[in-house]
Image (cartoon, rainbow, N blue to C red; front, top):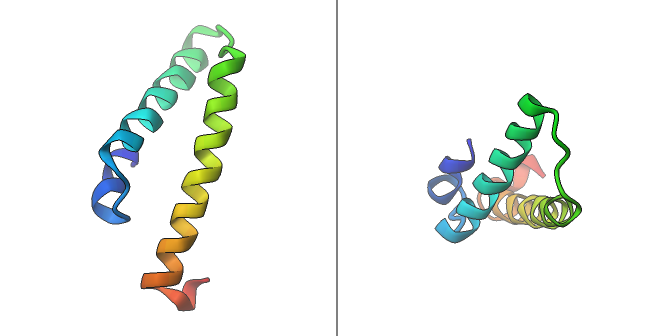
Length: 67
């Protein structure tokens, strides 16, 4: 799903790459049981907040009835 964001909401490829890297770290942790480091956790929270803001802005512009 992350890889569709550049085409669906116009997210930059660089941001998509960052989100995908964070997704991979979480996925590795899910299967190995190893904890995700604090820096990555903080980066994930920041990126999630930014993505939520981007999606809300996109919805307001293209589908205001959904907001």
